[in-house]
Image (cartoon, rainbow, N blue to C red; front, side, top):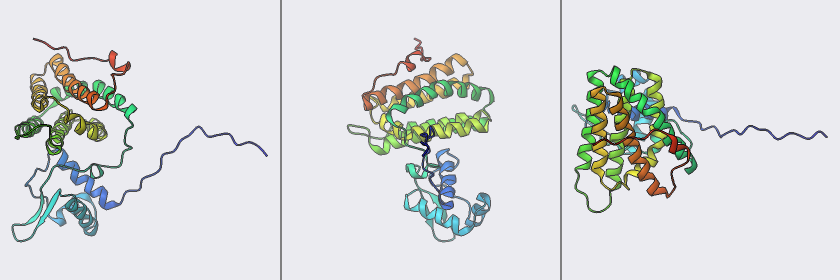
Length: 267
């Protein structure tokens, strides 16, 4: 009997996703991007089902998932409707399932950010519309509001989550400002992949206001249009997150990371 050669392929399990959950993802994407804010009313059931191209029963199932997660609330009456009540999206409603990155892959994600985000920010500076810049300012404002919350001792889970929402919203706004849909999709995947890491890292920041300051600095750099300033501000944001993650994980900087660009501080 002939010996069967071992296959060199490794297949990951296929994760089937219910239509109602895909609809829920579409709605949470709009909330994460800042297109719909806390307190705002979503379109009517008929309008929403037409926009999403799904049946009303499927939409109702999606709304039930979002309501159970505390993201939306259905208000009865003539002034009622479907309202957003939280921007804290649980990981299982952030988008199509992605494999949880093992610790050794975090360096790869950090490396990708260093190579990707400065170029995206430069491109955004060239093509941003007033609406794009307003979305970035809104994200910075959310970060400022969160960092001003009274705190005692360590950063709370709620503050860490809200700071991550603000940072994610800013990055997606920057990606949108490039006017390139592929870049937007790449940024969304990267943000989702890094979300849990970022929440953990934010809790370890020595000063939560530092995150807001670097976000505002990135906005100012994009508004200035100066490529060198954009690079410095973007890389400084990434380095702060990296340092906080090193503290959480206890892992040193990889050799590959040591040859990547760094933010050169200026006086």
